Image (tube, rainbow, N blue to C red; front, side):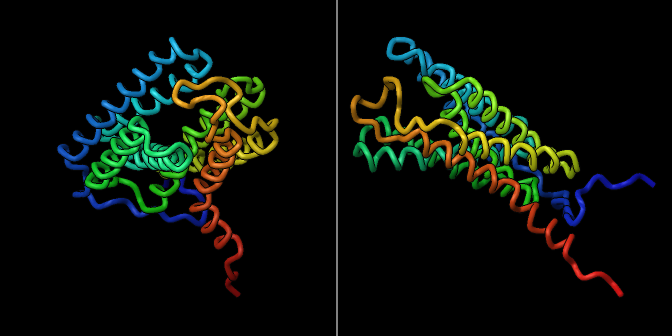
Length: 256
């Protein structure tokens, strides 16, 4: 008999067979994600005339939107939670910018289109268990702040490599967990602390150290250190849904 690859103490309940994502809801969410991808790509191109130092970060963010859109259009089981994490962080970032800079049209539009994406994702049926979905959402939330922190101007090369590696390992781990694979849990348990420790031990950059296309100087409301803290906290949150049942399993009362 083949051995189960499910991590100890974790019982995966498969979704009902009739819980496949409706093509219309997933397709609409995927098309909206594609529009966000185009918008992020246009922003990347616009940075050529303003400040090339932020182009690498925006290129990676554009790729993340593209992955989310592709996943929804092809109805991947992880796509709903992945897109929700990206949009949740974007909405929170826009809200912070409105608080710091006031209701600028660019910020309001950016926040609004991500709210619409969240609403569209609400109608996409999830093919994951609740634990898998929460883990994927948290891992996805960690991605954009991790990218912004790691690829910020004047960031050190070591921190950049460590943070991006930790975020990538964490994402692969949560995808493995969504398939009930033990290696997914191992990767997540490695990626989360790598990302968190890399952020917490990085030299403090405090605020933007280079000009930004959408933030006037010297007004710099978005602290890079805050991006790092959000990425680290979300990374830890991605493994918590699995750590709790593992601890319960290890400390469960032994039969007499």
